[in-house]
Length: 564
Image (tube, rainbow, N blue to C red; front, side):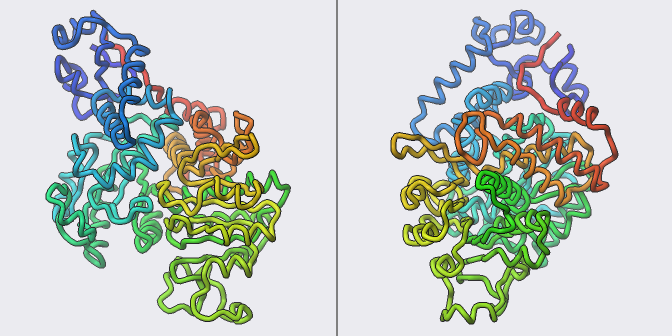
């Protein structure tokens, strides 16, 4: 028997490849075809009597699955249904998502994945990926050897401390790597048999979880300091031994760890942090499109960002890089950015200022002219700076108040406003309010999906500043292009490639294309990233034509394997 369409090297044993039969086939999500097994396959694989007699077509299966999806009455129920389908028949799962991508991405990822993470221990059904708990760090090699994927192309790892805008969710954070890798496959065609989600369980400080009798994680306060660093180092060393060529993506680590860990390990293995670099790149792409449509230079803008965590710093870094490309010096570019956090405007006289914020802190001498006492809040900054761009990464719902937005719009003809926090409940403002408060003049993009806004009989599609337009293509370009390391230039190239999709297929004014073209976008991003990797000297030279063929060969299309 030969199995076509499944990368055979990603199964552990030849025996599994050569002879899965009966229930073993039905219980393997990537081998299972459910009711679509043909009569001949049922006899050859020992499936007679194990399935209803009718042989379903894929279209019949998709109709049945979608009907069941629609019967669910809440986002969480739909999330559970899709997760169960993924565990049962992974090919059908991706065929269904591909057919209904705009409707289902918000279920398998933000915003609904947040609810899935919050209730993880209560809706748990089947393990996916690896769970590595702090007390087991001395068994790292044995745990990695148990990985359900023998030779992964991509690992997404989290420690569950800063899940979306929801905070410390402990072991429930596993929903994020699973969701991210689902998007790697859906949007860029990375084969699901080559992806591995990992949860590093270093405990949780979430007292509600620790009191929950059903909580599945290690019941201990979060490990910090040297103990945490030793554990992370053991994990990285284990990955390097077991999977030396893998791409490792860090996801939803706290602001105190995210940039620090990236800086520590980025020269040791092929790795990046999507919260920092991916968010920065996708935001920059939207800003570049907005500038093109306004016929203005990004270097001439005044940018205020509410929130100064990892995502905000990533955005700052990408914006500064783009401004430098337009002719500014590093110092001049940084002077165009004002960061506001929970303590107000970030300035250099603040005690114990985090290293990541120091680069963008305003000089105390500059603030003397503001005649401000104590903290300088967002409204005061907007009133003084008159920003042309306002970005939110604060996870503070409603932080962009009517007074703040109207103040901004009073000085700027087309204010660019990006409330990026997710899930939806954490957004700094809704698109409908932003357009209402600016008489329809605001240029808006959001972090979570929002419905069209209808004003004056005209519907405005709101583009989603969705990392799914960046990280799947970045990963595809790295894997297909054979990159050994991830450079900052690769994310600038990714942003520019996404910005080139600035004329959405639906003819709207949205700054981002619809999800329906995500695969085409990812291919463009992958090519730009792979070419930049060659320019940066981290990948071997390959002619562009051959590189495009390598990318196409890596883009799996969900279709049932044929058995013969």
